[in-house]
Length: 107
Image (cartoon, rainbow, N blue to C red; front, side):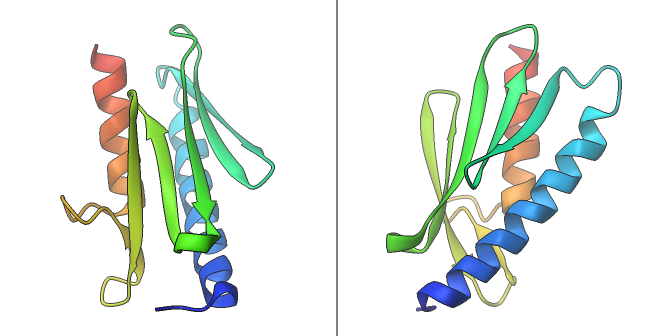
């Protein structure tokens, strides 16, 4: 298990990569969402729907938590993938958020 310092570095890197990915997606005029950083968390804000997803690191359990679609998703660090991964599906953080955004906008 990674120590707290390793977790913080990995989580910060993962959230920065996700933020850049989402900013690029949000620049598309039809994206339907914005992204903002607030107190170490990322928020994905859906303009027309008034909803948001919250992505936060959880240091005590060494996970990244995603609150979206009335569900909590808990991603663990996978050293082999060098990424935070949702255990039940194998999705990386970016893949999971992309899927959740797509599902939310399709509703």
